[in-house]
Amino acid sequence: MLTAADFRAQFPFFAAHPDWIYLDNAATAHKPQAVIARELAFYQQQNSNVHRAAHGLAHEATRAFEQARSTVHQFLKPAADSQLIWTAGTTAGLNQLAFGLMDSILQPGDRILLTALEHHANIVPWQFHCQRYGIQIDVVPLDSANRLDLVVFRQLLERKPKVVSISHVSNGLGHIQPVQSLVAAAKAAGALTIIDGAQGISAGPLDLAAIDCDFYLFSGHKLYGPTGIGALYGKTGALELLRPLLYGGEMIKQVSFTGTVLNDLPYRLEAGTPNIAGALGLAAAVEFLQRFEPAVLQQHKQQLLQRLYQGCAQIPGLKLLSGLEDNAGIVSLVLPGEHPSDLATLLDQQKIAVRAGTHCAMPLYSALQQPGAVRLSLAPYNTITEVDAAIAALAQAVELF
Amino acid sequence: MQQQIEFIQSQQAIFAEVSQHRDWQQKYRLLMQLGKALPPLPDALKRDELLVAGCESAAWLCHQQQDGRHFWAFDSDARIIKGVITALLSQLNGLHRDELSAIDIAALYQQLGLAQGLSPSRSNGVAAVIRRIRQVL
Image 1: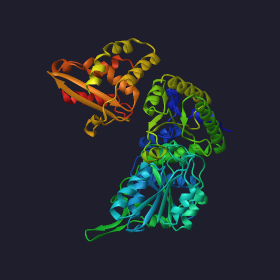
Image 2: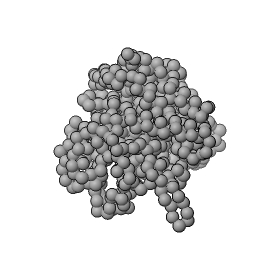
Image 3: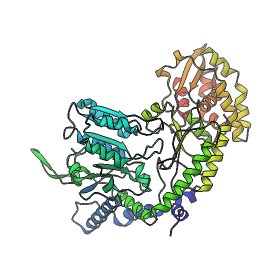
Image 4: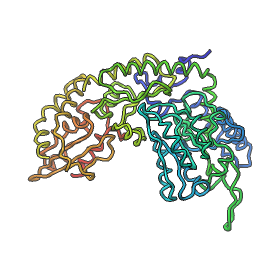
């Protein structure tokens, strides 16, 4: 059986930078050789546009592109009547949803429900359109353990939001939300359900048929795939509700100056030449992942997380914002009274790559009453040695204050 | 603001001291002490137009001119950048325009010998502060 060490060996980045310790996986993950090779092979041997051309090369590119769609779709353990739309990433997908549901589902006077720990991409597009349409946004607050307050969540559902959009995993803290029960409650209240899976996609094997959400979104680059490609998964009936955000290209059936007939799904929501190499690269990332036993990778990451968490907790003065339970591999911490960028600078000096700041989740940090945090985020290719070195570097940094 | 400027003037020796240390811990220890010792700007001066865009932490840079000589004062939520900018300003404050024009501030920063380059990353506000200093000239 392949081990976590076999997994790491597939990532050329580590050989190129043996002196760095990369704990910024929640920002982006590294790419295995299989993904790099697939993108390269597409441009070297296969490059043609998809869907339109009349030649064999384009047919082959189209076949590979649609095969990639199917590979990624099946990886999500999809509900029976669902589809996968290619996007540029989670942010692009959320913009499509916020724009696409106005008018068709959301009318002036309606409400939607978000949470205090969302990434800006799951706040700002809603805010932008809701202000114009006169739609109210309710926000689920955090409880004392920095997790969603489920009592208030249920109370806010009584206001009958038309849409509930929640992140699967908090990007600022790493906490995994109980999405299956959240979705069930939201559906019972009559809402369309959206799960922002930007961090959830790499948290472990998904089962979207079981979660039963209407939409799920993620970015390829956090799943060891290329940047600039992502997916919007949706139940077909829910996708049919969406007014396209972008117009032109393959999304059209017939055009005249008196009117245009839009194409069917999934093409209707994929205007312009898609990121073909990116889609093939993302499918290669999924196939690469499927060579490993999920439990092996998960167990290893959890072992790293326990060790990192306990190591950080033992450094005098540090305050951990993340909890260890139901955590996808993130330790968020602060040195009270100090700005997180100082701690990050001292880690950078020791070649420990982390992120500092508000992680595009400013409302989360205002709820936590912190100016931001230092975020250490793990992937299964990290090692015990790296975790120990990071803890030592952190202790060294804290000692300088 | 006068209090900051006087403090910065009194710290001219630190620049050489930081530059000479081989050990990164010693460099940062000095810079962080310097950052902590820098008197804060009065809240009245922490105006939005003095905010330096491009820093992850909030940072304010004020400028004043006296008898043809230029002076800056600085404040930030983060300690290291306060120390770094104080060390730089200690080498720049009080100079005339033509003297300042002859100085490569980025090269001056490099002399401190910190690992972090002047990347456009938001986590590194030094480049943004240097641009703001240059704008005055």
